[in-house]
Amino acid sequence: MAYLLFAFILVIDQLTKFYISSNFLPGESVGVVEPFFHITYVLNPGAAFGMLPSARWFFVLAAAALLAAFLWYHKRLRRQPAAFYYGCVALLAGAVGNLIDRIRQGLVIDFFDFRIWPVFNIADVAIVLGVASMIFAILFRMKEMDD
Image (cartoon, rainbow, N blue to C red):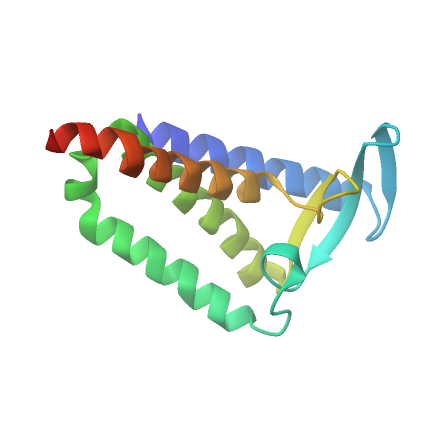
C-alpha cells in the first residue's frame, strides 16, 4: 500500500507540473475561484516561500539523504503506527517530486495560488500532510503504544 501511495503522489505531482509547464507561460495566472484561488505558473529556485534561492545543491543533497534514510530505516518504519509510516511515505514522495524538478531544470514548478500564501504544488501538499501525520502519530498514536 505504501508503494501505491508513493507512486500516486509522485505521478499526480509530475503530471500536474507537466500540464502547467506545457500550457502556461512562467508568471501566467488564471483565476479559478476569483479572487481567492488562481493557477499561477511559478518557477521556484528555492524551498518553501522561495527561501534560499541559490541553494539548489543543498536541496538536492537533502532530498537524497532523506531517501537514503527512509530506505535504511524502512523495516523499522513499517512497524510504527500507520499515521507515522504513511506520513513518512508522503513526505518522501513530495521530496522526490520536487527533487525531480531540481535535477531536471534547477527550479521547482509551483502553481496553486491562494494569493494570501506563497504559490505551491502537489509535492508541497504531500510534504505538509506527511509531516502533520507524523506529528499526529508522535503526539497521540505513539503515546498510546507506550501506555
